[in-house]
Length: 137
Image: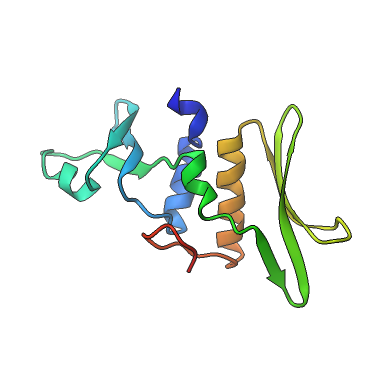
């Protein structure tokens, strides 16, 4: 099911706030009475034209979509940190240097939430910015 492939609504809202592209794909359709997950093949702007009172659409990126934005390496001053994943009863994503010292680390129950949290952390620290093409700026 798609729910295991996408982050929580709260994390998706944060991704949107940090500039994650809101192009076609899976979205949370947020209304006062309920929230649903919908697939939008065209643009959100095109879909909104068909609503008298359009709901709020928040991109729900899949694990695969978020993978495009996570850099495999980060250079801070002269130190290089590499992306690493650890799976136990949780998913841990971190950036480690050659001495196994952590630069950033997040741990979540789902891979989708872990990836989203790392993207938010990297965007907050201004290590990455997003653009619509799916590449880092």
